[in-house]
Length: 140
Image (cartoon, rainbow, N blue to C red):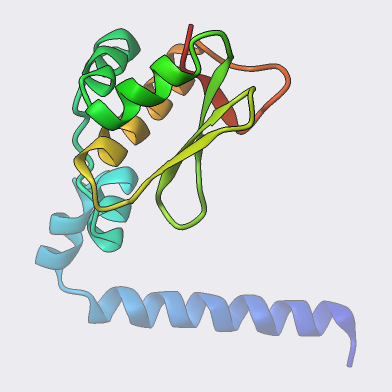
């Protein structure tokens, strides 16, 4: 088959399917979905709240240090650099340059706060590490 004709048929099929799908979606449904941002919709689909807990990384760090588990980890690693990493399963990991790690379960309140701290650091472009591109510094 000629590639030009095949491309034209694919384009016509795509236009036909888009026209049919737009006719099947009611106007109310389209209006309802137009006001929702992608992060909100993604958070709803993944079961996570999209609201930020803190307005800046310093307040988020202070709140995290209020957790006894994180506080004792930081005291044990006082002379080490501590990094915070997101993990694939939704949890977070504190990693010390001494080799000690602390993993927070994704269901915990501290994990949600740590994820918020991580996101705020990326937004503010603060506490970023040159040596660990997938982590932020926690001891800064």
